[in-house]
Image 1 (cartoon, rainbow, N blue to C red):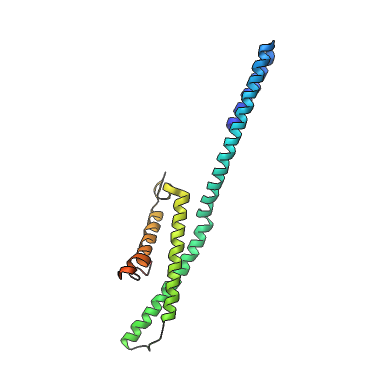
Image 2 (tube, helix red, strand yellow):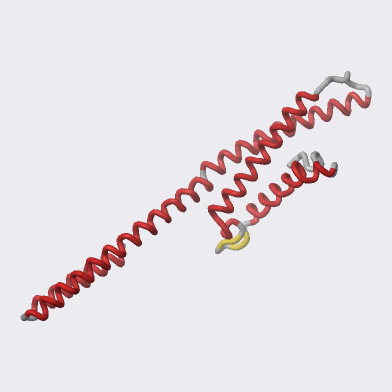
Length: 181
């Protein structure tokens, strides 16, 4: 916008100067300068609109990822903690049965429900990480203030969860080793 204002001021000054000179050549110069000025203004206006539209879209995406998405993910993390606590309670019951302190119960339905929620939370965290990477790109891990340690930690947690939930479980190495995550 300041570029457009500067061009407008220059055109106004040029028009004032050309009125001071008499003759046909000054009128031709004035017409040519007005045409050049108008075409430059149109070009700048269209470039400013494109930059503003892209900037607004990117700014809105950053605002969404930094605001509402973080709140949603925070709620999902708290819910995940409750499901992990419930799963630990079920595991504690199994230990009680093994020690002879409790009677055996069929908890297979509960384990299936908890496994489904575990997949759901892992998918949500992966989507959040991918969205952050798409919006912030390299700034997600490093910006002018240095390394963004929390985002690095968040990424490591998501990678470990994916490894445990979907990769190592097929080799009977995971699927529970990192349940707390």
